[in-house]
Image (cartoon, rainbow, N blue to C red; front, top):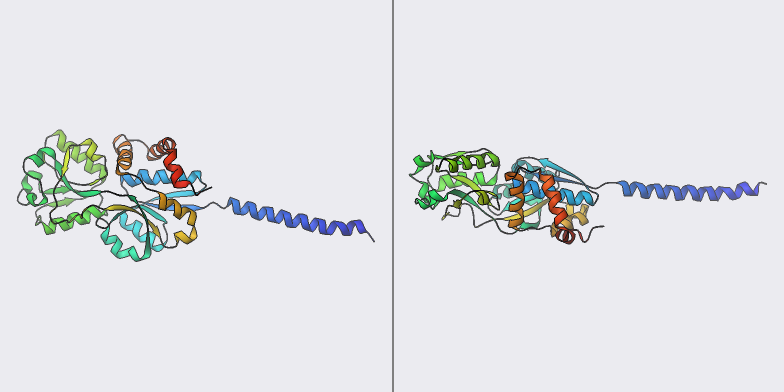
Length: 294
């Protein structure tokens, strides 16, 4: 009997078993976790999403930014096709979206505590007596009977449609455009010393670039100021508790976001470059957000 051959059988079996365990471990380690972020076409959330992308890619995640109008982002979050939105303006601006999809979504955390939104005019217009939305009634001629808005899917556009009805401004046209187009029209009005009404929100670099003043909103159509929430699809916490914990910690000041907006929108820098520079220069803040991650 070949005892040597018999002894080799269990040894080979153990070797194969050990090899299989190693391969399984390697496969598990090589499985890259992913994150699908919803990205409405607004400067603040554009840089904010890129900051998250830079941080999480360094932690091994594959992060995809999905550029969509706000309404579609909420719908796809509710359907589970997207994971997270970093620009949930609540309770006022995105009230309609939340009423429609909120029971299918998860408010993870507030990532910007203080905001404001509404209608604004140049200071020279404000000082001429147009200081409240109520003052717009009967003065359409000096504004060419129009309010310059942003993207049609934005919550502030719905608020402004409500304002037109509530304040009796039916002779005004709400002109939808884009955030950069609104900024360009505002610059043109300042260069010509003209009157203009724009939809604006804070934090935003528009207040750094132009001397504009928010109009009083006595009917509180635009609310008393939203908070900006991180909104997740249902099930993210159980699917990836480590990622969920990161988003619970992720929070910035309005000043930080305004700075990002200025670098991206006004200086024309690539948003990922702005994000990488900020992450590199703010390692202590990033470490607080990622202290639980390997």
